[in-house]
Length: 296
Image 1 (cartoon, helix red, strand yellow):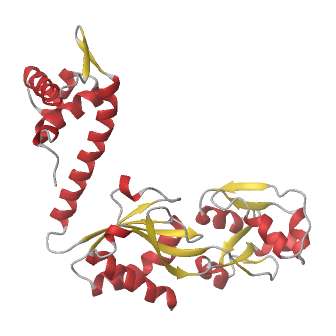
Image 2 (cartoon, helix red, strand yellow):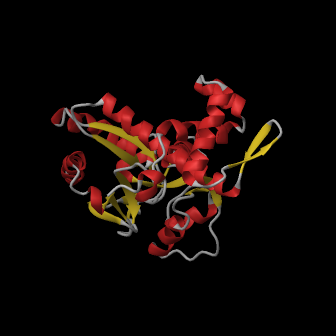
Image 3 (cartoon, helix red, strand yellow):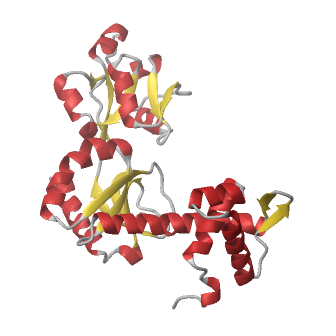
């Protein structure tokens, strides 16, 4: 059931309020909305009267948000953004559904994107919008239908469908391995290691899993696999990379295993989605498709 009409102001009032709150000026908002200053002022006054709350402090020729107005502005701005996005999606795809999918950058570009054509061909009425997310988020506060998750099977407020496991290998350029005469896992303690900020303890776990004693592990930090892989190819160090994401580089010889110590990660890849969206037709179709693709 929708709230009382009293708490559902018209869109025109909310748009005027958002514009003034963002620009900090009735004049600037009037120019942006192609209205007169008096028209914008009347809309703000009407909104305040409807809500029974003062949203702005008037000071001579300027206005500034009250504490209550500031909090309200943040929520209204997000609500208007979501309405606009929903309308744009509907206009772009009036006969089918839209799936807003959050992806991990390298997984999305290296594994998912090359396969998406097959899904879209089999589901011509579905449009997929891709956005990047590096860590779990609250589905209730975002207009995302599903997300690719790497980690343990835990995401508050979401269901998880298993996709695949992952094996990693310490990879570097052929020249780097030759210059440093790397032959054992122990030798990697003496060279530059490339770390991912999203997996800060990956190298520690790798050394422990290979029986190598260490005090500390230093090196360069990267926020994405793609840049870490490029740095490794450029001879800057050894990166611990998923084999399925660097298949082409390994095949061409741009990257090689610094030592033959492939290890399976304790985390897995999952498709995460809010429970209330589980039966959404585009998501159902995508879930069935990606599970089949991941099993190949």
